[in-house]
Length: 84
Image (cartoon, rainbow, N blue to C red; front, side, top):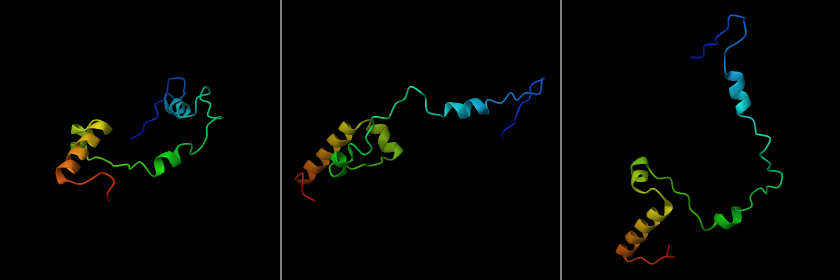
């Protein structure tokens, strides 16, 4: 529920205008030299994005730990890397 507070002089005491202004791009951010999709080809074929469930994410805090565990599972199964 949003309640607009009014000061004694009748002006709004709401911070909504400030919050909206805070969402605008800062003047010191300069993306004019940016290149859209610069790294898309590099990652398109070689990376897979996997979303971990919260309980799993508590155990594996980074990609390295996930990769290590998966390599152990693959080795235990006798599978070779690269075979699909």
